[in-house]
View 1 (cartoon, rainbow, N blue to C red):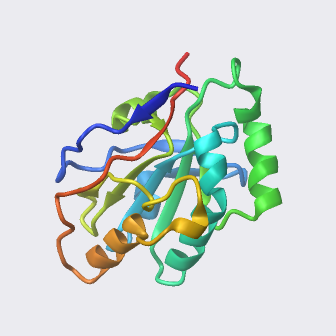
View 2 (tube, rainbow, N blue to C red):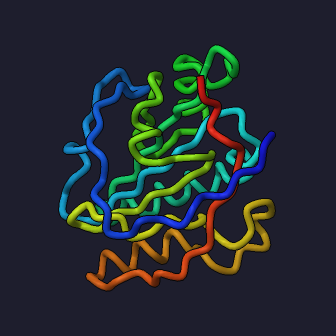
Length: 182
């Protein structure tokens, strides 16, 4: 497990276009998630201990934002040949077991992760209603222990954007396992 931190984001950049298969059997493109509200794109996987530690909080995030019609999209870009836990079939199983409230996409080619500049799992990208990057920080202030969370930084950023306000440029990097490149 190689600890990786997200780099400082190029805030204001456009959301990369993508079309990927989802674990629900459908294919989605970035346009399917453009509804004039913020968009959360998160790179996650099954095997990463950082993602496992926050998985229930990601589910809560998806549930909370769904109430406001804010789209949350998860993408797995890991090389499944080296990490079979991250195969399409295992992504389907995990999402069904945990009842993920968000669309879960599979980026087998890893082209989408590269287009976003994703480097780790978890890695978060929050876009405003015009699909301009506004937040690339961490989920909250206690990745390892949910009972110690005092600030839901990503959720708060989305709520700020939903109100039409600007998110602070001062953002704390997310950290996790490096994406497992081919």
